[in-house]
Length: 110
Image (cartoon, rainbow, N blue to C red; front, side):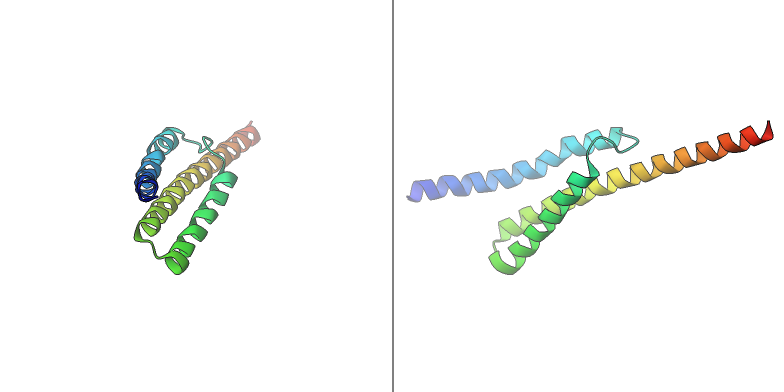
């Protein structure tokens, strides 16, 4: 039973590190995506909410420092991606709105 416990502890630590690294490819993809369409904002909102609840649970009910640290990494990763997607979509929407105004204005001039 002790060996199984040590294996699970190792996997637990490794999964936290892997989880942190898993944000790198998605953030790279989002950096290239000028309109923020590379990922669903709805899905990311749900993941962010779940990760925040998990962090609160870890702090209030669990107290495991590694679990809290991993939860913080997940919240920061999710919120970073959320910000990147939202800001790019907003910028794309503003660009489109400006273009429509310019087109409308130029059509009135004709």
